[in-house]
Image 1 (tube, one colour):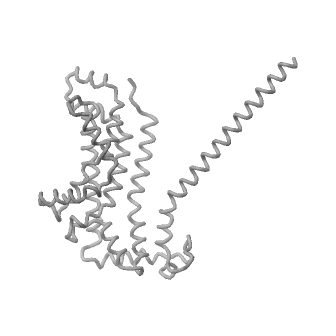
Image 2: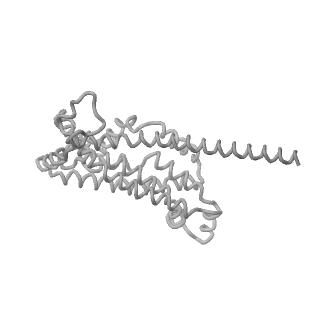
Image 3: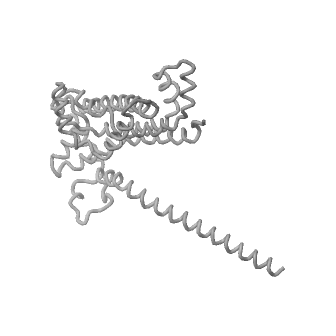
Length: 295
């Protein structure tokens, strides 16, 4: 009886220790994620605070992380400036919307098609192409900026919408993301479709793509964010073709007197990407939780 009691006591202590370690680990993870989340939210918070600060508070030292006398004058001046531009403010916004939607749709199409071929196709040079895609992830687009400009100039697309859209219609990240997702599709599903007489195009869009919603939503987030912030002032000189970020940059370059207006415009520009992110994130979570491919 005594030995059994000692054994139970040891088991109880070991169990309590495991529970304590588990709680301590959970608290540590939550603390780390809280700090990480705070660093991610801080830039957005500062942008909002700076947009509601009056101009005199910009020169306070040390700078405050809050607005002492918050005001919406910066937003009023932003819309007042928008009415005095060379072209209407709505034109800049319409250009950004058109370019963003076009790039997002075309990039999803091209990335999906290329990823399907690289993931499920069988041809010579496949490994080399996959290696090129992976290596391309290591470089920023600025590395090939001069080459892009030369190609666009040779094609006669300078000062057109195509100059903004063409360099963004395919990205290594988009192709790699879709390839990794499509690679999880069972080969037996594709072989069964081939036996039934389906073409590769039909297999791609009617069988494989409906199961790629998480990857597509993630790609939409990346593509929308990159294209919405696109400036391209080196490609486009006509004011009627410039995008909204270009107008914001021009306002920010007007000196400290216009910094509040520039921050108000930046906050205004944050709204569409945040909305798209929240909607797409919800769909990604729902799709990953309720759908999947089983062999």
